[in-house]
Image 1 (cartoon, one colour):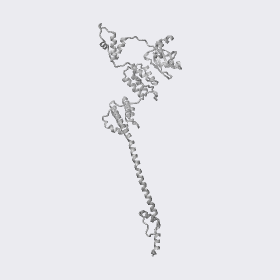
Image 2: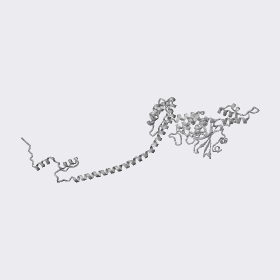
Image 3: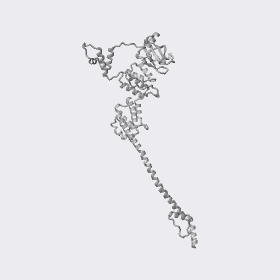
Image 4: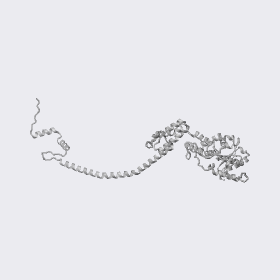
Length: 440
């Protein structure tokens, strides 16, 4: 009941049309309109729905619960419910406006509804005849029929469209992607999964897709609904992809796939998943046949990867003739990454203990070595000091002999810097005449 009181209903539309003497088949009620919007903007926005024709505003009323304005519009064309979207986007930006229009009440035809339900469940009236209990008169008992229909519903696994589901993330088509919204590739994957695997009807799938769109993306689907009222959910997705997706040929997709390389710090499993995403686009675009996907994936992994050690351990090059599938290859790569990380954690856990042991040994060795070296240097200095003291001149005729030959030569060179003068001095002392050279 809260939902009925918070939004305008057909009952309000009927009462308002009676006060304005307006035909219900040409009346359209817009609610959620801001207060400052002009009459011209309202009419132009409503005329974006081509099925309405010329639109004229007949009245405005403030809605206290929604804190917005309700607008009653008169349309030149008769309202066709199949061509009127549940909401429209204003031409002056802002949030969407909701639409309310009159629909003819339909008679409650139990037999028609029963046949429609049985057809959707893949059953016939014969199945109900077999399930209901026979009566004495042989006629159909309404209680038996209701009980049989309940048995059919309990045996089926298909749930109604109103069951709970995971909503699609919001996509607007604005670049860069705003916070809280989904990128185009992720939204396309989720929407495609909904269309291909969802058990609900096409009407429910279209409604879920519309709920996830806003802004420019919603305007595109709104245009599709106006031109193709019976468009399928698959056509909705194709329209979004054709407008907001990058238009690349099969050759360009293949070249982009062959140019992939592993980034610094990127794990091999992450690079493999990136290769697979690009390969799927190439195959879907017709750049490669499906049976060549495994070989192309393996070749690009060898070409663009920098994890040579892991490729050798997995023997990737030896498997070119029989390339594995994506799931098997990804499982092997992730298992090898797990083993390498386990080994690295063990090595890093043992490494600090070794370092401390080596440091203790190195700290204990220099103490004894430095002590012995200092003692040897002290003894050598003492010996040199004694030698310097013993180098003083002595009265003995015999020259002083140094224990080391180099020291003796050095001393002699210091005492007799001029050998010729020394020879003359020795000759005078011994009174030996030196013969003069013969000039003749």
